[in-house]
Each structure stands twice: as structure tokens, then as C-alpha cells.
Amino acid sequence: MNNIPNRKAICDVLLKQAETDKDIVVLCSDSRGSASMAPFFEAFPEQSVETGIAEQNLVSISAGMAKCGMKAFCFSPASFLSTRSYEQAKVDAAYSNTNVTLVGISGGISYGELGMSHHSAQDIAAMAAIPNMRVYLPSDRFQTACLIKALLSDEKPSYVRVGRNPVADIYQENCPFAMDEATVIPDADPSAAVPSSAMDWNSLPEGLVTIAACGEMVHPAVMAGQLLKEKGIHTVILDMYCVKPLDVNAVLAAAAKSSLIVTAEEHAPFGGLGSMICQTVVQHCPKKVIPLALPDTPVITGKSQAVFDHYGLNAQGIAKTVSDSLA
Image (cartoon, rainbow, N blue to C red):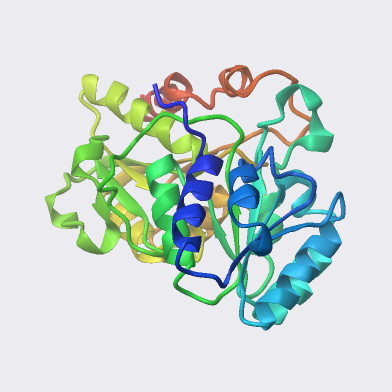
């Protein structure tokens, strides 16, 4: 079982790249430990900024440094970064088109027992609603590393949400990755995964089930696909790490082959991945879509997996939703 959280994968990439790229700067809001960025602060103190518990200042300072030519990565708990500094994200980062990567750490329900005040179940909807802001939820440490390397090579604002705990590996070192393209996992077989533009959609059988997921929900979606395969139900898993821009071509190509589409996300039921896919499918390729998400109420308190299990956001729950819908 992997014991490296995605936040550490981000630190590892930035540590390596900062050896030769002195434009990289990391900013934290009294969160370098939670963000796994303490090693970066120790190795590159002149490329590190601590703002204290001041999320609004964190984003504004990041945007200012980006305007001076720096590649700014700012880290703060997703629950605070996506709410307390929302105006700064909208105006200073996105409207001003600055090279700022906002990294929401401990996203979703990672903080578990701390409850709704520390959960970020609305951040996808909030950040995706900002013009010029991209939204990414990588699914494992290998994909996270690929994403951060790609973000280092462009100059556009983005929001990246990662969880607090390690997540099971889906891919390997040679992770299939293309920027802003969904990763397609045919028949729930990660070894056959490819970026959507490389997928031979004609090779998929008609009437299959598409399971589209993002972030920590991708692994249970793959596991659900494997459970369904044992029952003779074919699936294609869409790893939608790029929630915005949404890979519309992949969604529609999968929908054209599908009798049912199920989405899974660690987010409220409104404005997230499920809403986006429903909107896309109903406009272009009407099919039945069942969105699975956290409920529209403060969720129960407990460790992440216990919460996921309670709401059916696990392999068994996703597979049951599919089986019941096809019955």
C-alpha cells in the first residue's frame, strides 16, 4: 500500500525543479507541515514565503510575485483557500491572469472529525465558476507529479486540490498523462490506460457503463469497474483529473458507447464534476447520468474512508449503483 500522499509528491517535484529553476517560489499560510512543504522551506529559504494565517494575503502576495516573473505555488487548506481568499483568487490570480498555482491541501473531507468548517465540499464549484481559473484533482501520486511538472511549464492560473492522506496507486512511474485530457481506463485495467486523444474508442463494446471520477474517487471507481467485470458488465473509467477545462471530447466519446454514465466525486452534489458532465451529455448525447457525491448536508464526522463507506462512495457502493440501475 502506498504511504506517500499526493502533497508530498508535489513537494518532491518542486524540490527537484527548484535546483535549476530559481523562479519557483512556494508560499504557505502557516501550513508548511500540513502541505509537506517543510523540506522545500529548509532547502530553499530564499524561495519560500510564510504569510501566517492570512489566506487573503497569501494569494495576493503570490499574484504579485508572479507578476514579477516568479512561478508561485501557494499552499493552504482547501477549506480556507477556496473561501476566505475567494475574491483574491478571482481578481488577483484569475482576472489578472497571473502564474499562480493555488494548492488546496487536505481537500474534501480529509479533516474528517473536524467537521464542516474544515471540509471543502464546495471548492470545485466555486473555483470552476471563476473565468480563467483551471481546476485539477489528480488521482494518485504519479499523476500528481505529472500535473505539477506540466503546470511549471505554463503561465496560467490554476487550482489544484489534493487530500491529506496517502491514496492507493493507480498508475506507475510511466503514468499516462496529457495536459487537460482525461485518462481513459478501459475495462478498469490501469495497465491499458491512455490519454483520451490516444484512445481507440471504436475498440470499446456498445452498451458499456462509463464511470467518471476525479481525485480520490478514481481508485474506488476502478475497483468498482473490476467488480462489475466479474459480473460481465463492461466499463470504461474516465479519470477526470482535469475538471476544468472539462475534456468534453472524452465525455462524449464515452457517452456514445454507453448505456449508463455514473459520476463519483468527493464534493457536494451541485456544481461539481457530476453537474458538468450532466450538462455536457444532455446538450450533445442524451444518456442516463447518475451523479454520486456527498449529500447536501453537513456530512457525518469520521475518518475519510468511514465517511465514504457511509455514503456509498466506495467500490462496492459505485458497483451497486451501476448494478441496480441496469437491473
